View 1: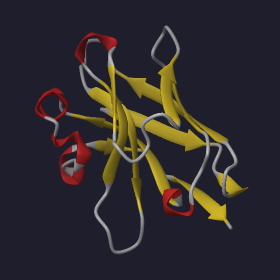
View 2: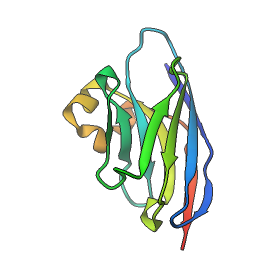
View 3: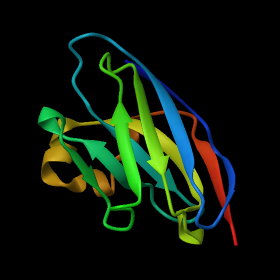
View 4: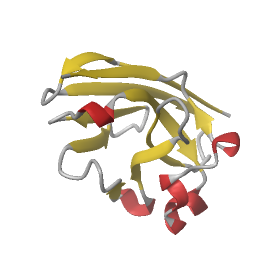
Length: 128
């Protein structure tokens, strides 16, 4: 069982920055691929960035160089720093725990929502 809770969403001007946080509660020994995801109405949830096995990170092409994911040493908090925000970055952002297989295969980019664990989501609005 994994419990996740996001915070830090809000409204920002295009070109601005925003930092999201996620608190993580999970049982020791449970291994998941942790990361950030986002969704807009009518579209599938998509991966933004994940921590792969070994601690390396992987990002969606659309956010590379602008977004950075990080976590604390205890891995009870995870962060998404978003810079140079674009109108198309608006949406509901989720921190998520998905299977290690999805991260290894690259299918984290379109995760299996039914099989993952998710926070309640936090809204990011980008104004022109």
